[in-house]
Image (tube, rainbow, N blue to C red; front, side, top):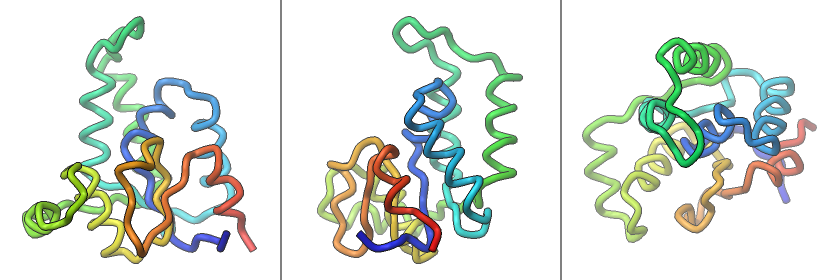
Length: 146
């Protein structure tokens, strides 16, 4: 597997980081320790999706309060470069064959920044020929610094 130069982090990875999924925490810590902010990307869409999940009760987990959510968002803003979603990105997402429009948007945004890896907990919706998608626990190998 080739070494990734620019890495896009999907919303589900951010959510799992915030909710304490250990393999995701290890992945994010490794990436942040070994990569500059300029090559680690997420998007305002991913941040919005993360906020929406955290402020909602999920199973046994209580909804997070605003202060806790803000602390995670502040952390992500300090460690990751956020990419913006534009109306043209949304329109283009509907033209792709993949049925998951939100994931299409993530892909389009990552492609505009020439990311060669998307870290996601949901690989099945990221089947695109010009980018590799990897699970957080596999990304530690794929993202090794040369």
